[in-house]
Amino acid sequence: MQPKTCVVTGSSTGIGRGIAERFGAEGCEVVVNYRSSKEPADETVRRIEEAGGSAIAVQADVTDQAQVDEMRDRTHEEFGGIDVLVNNAGINQDIMFEEMSHEDWDVVLDVHLDGAFHCTQTFYDDLADADEGRLVNISSIVGKGGNLGQANYATAKAGIFGFTRTLALELAREGSTANCVAPGFIRTRMVEELSEKVKQRIEDDTPLGRLGTVEEVAEVVAFLASDRSSFITGEVIDVNGGKDL
Ligand SMILES: NC(=O)c1ccc[n+]([C@@H]2O[C@H](COP(=O)([O-])OP(=O)(O)OC[C@H]3O[C@@H](n4cnc5c(N)ncnc54)[C@H](OP(=O)(O)O)[C@@H]3O)[C@@H](O)[C@H]2O)c1
Image 1 (cartoon, protein in one colour):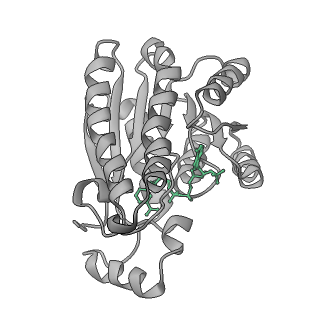
Image 2 (cartoon, rainbow, N blue to C red):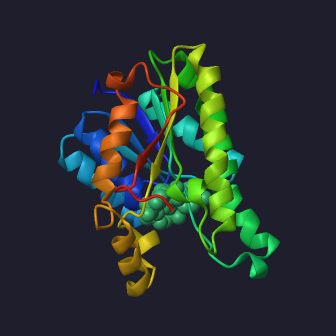
């Protein structure tokens, strides 16, 4: 991967941290975004710097346009325009639909969809002006297959597919690409919170017989963010151990 300037939303922990570390190891300048977990974000920056990379932690709630604007200003001050945006920040608030409140619905759609809207809108000119800009959105296997108790999350993640394909058409006019990665069940705090019984069932239902790792997702994101993916756009790449819901 040619060294690039990359913003990874929600990279204080989990998949985002794995992506940020991978970019750092490739010699990129990395903006480690987080909402409230400052210490883990600082730890991500420390790991990137220790590996010889360059990074800053920037607090911004992606649901808040003003905070995202501040993140862009801080990014531009430190590194100038960016080449790569990874919309990764995410939450889940699982509950069967019958019990789901409008607030449960809104809070999840806000982070995944409004968050992707704000960040992509704010960094759109950077991606368009970059020499082969790269937008990578993190969706989920659940966006394709649905999942019990996740009507809000599945709807948000399915929305990301349409968002990616449309941005791919629009960014193509600028020579830039937009792609999506749809992970299966990956060993992060989002999945660690599930009961042992549920985790075991997921492993049993996965042809490769285990949960995925953040490194396995980061590998695909790094490819999509690189010059090696120059003729790929509007795609959804599954990273799910062969599991279809
Ligand atoms: N784990 C899986 O099995 C799996 C599978 C498919 C897709 N995904 C997707 O992968 C992405 C990362 O998930 P993960 O498992 O790595 O979760 P995670 O470890 O809980 O990390 C979530 C990250 O998002 C950040 N975040 C949450 N709300 C935010 C907001 N409003 N503004 C800015 N940052 C925010 C968190 O920061 P704070 O801690 O500061 O809030 C944290 O850095 C999500 O989009 C998720 O839907 C995960």
